Length: 375
Image (cartoon, rainbow, N blue to C red; front, side, top):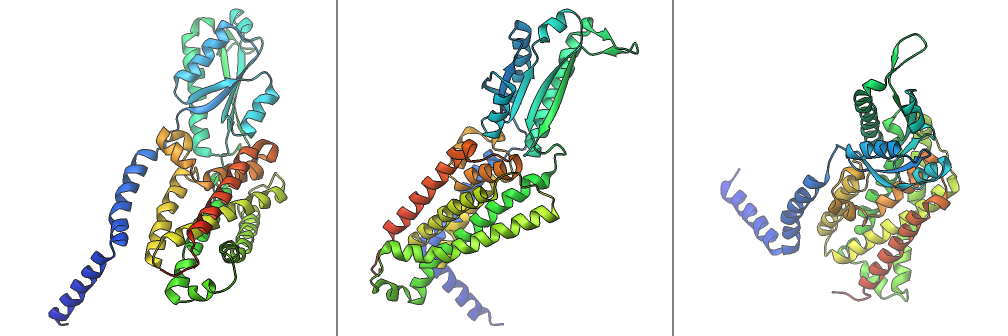
C-alpha cells in the first residue's frame, strides 16, 4: 500500500467535504442539536399525569384526599366531572390519563369509623405511565391510612382493616402488556420513517439521474407531478398497515376494538402528510446525501418525542410543544384510541383535524417549492 497515494485520496475527500458546506454543516450541527434536545426531553419517571376527579362526596374530607393525590406530583388535576360516564369519556378522548372516583358516603364513613373505598381508573394503554400512577395511588392510600391509624376498625374476623381502600383499575390493558402499546405504535413508525425517507429521495434522484428534465418539459403542472409521485406510496402504506395489523393481532394478540374503516381513513390522511413532508425535504436537498440527513433529522424526534417509546407526560414543556409539531404524535393517539379503546371519530376528531392540516400544509409547501425549471 502506497502511503503517498493513500494520503492524496484522503486529502481529496477532505477538500470535497469542505466544499459541500451544507452537508458538512448538517454532519456537525445535527448531533449537537439532537443531544441537547433529547438529553433534556427523555425521562422515564412519569409525572403530572392528567387527571380528572369525580367527587360524589363534595366534602372537606374528599377535597383533602384530592390534594393528597396532587401532592405526589404524579397526578395533575385537569378538572372535575359530574358522572362516572363523563369520567370514562374524558379518558377515551385523551383529555385525562387517570380518574379519581370518590363515593358519596366517603366523609360519612370516615366519621363513623367505617372502611371506605375510592377508585382510581388509569389509562393502561401505556404501561410505563400507568405503573407510575398505580404505584403513586397505592402510596397515597398507605400514607393516608398511617395518618388515620386512630380510625382503624375491626373486620369480620377481628383483623384490623384500614379505613381507606384505594382500588386501582387499569383500563384497556389490565395485564399491562407492553405489546398492546408497542404494536399500534409500530404502524405509525413504519409509515412515517419509510415513507419520509423514500419520498425525500424522489425529486433528488430525478435531478441526479437527469430524468427531471423530462418531467419539466411535459405539460404536467407542479401539483400533478407531486400527486403522481406520492400515489404509488399511498398504496404501499395501506398494504403495510394491513400487514402489521394482521401480524399484531394473530401473533401478539393485539385486539382491534374499534372500526377498521376509521383506522384506514385516519391512516390514509397520515400517509399523505408524511409523503408531503418527504417531498418537501426532497425540494430542499441538493443531493441524496442531504436528503437522507434531513430525513434522519425528523426521524429521531418521531421516535423520541411523539410518545412512541417514552411517555409525553414525563417530558418538559418545550419537548411537549415540539412533539405537537409531529404528525406521528396525533396519529399514535388516533390508532391507539381506535385499536385499544374502541373509540371513534367523535372522540378523536381534534387529532384527525390536525392530521388533515399537516397533510394540506406539507403538500402545499412541497408544491410551491418545486419549480418546473432547472437550477
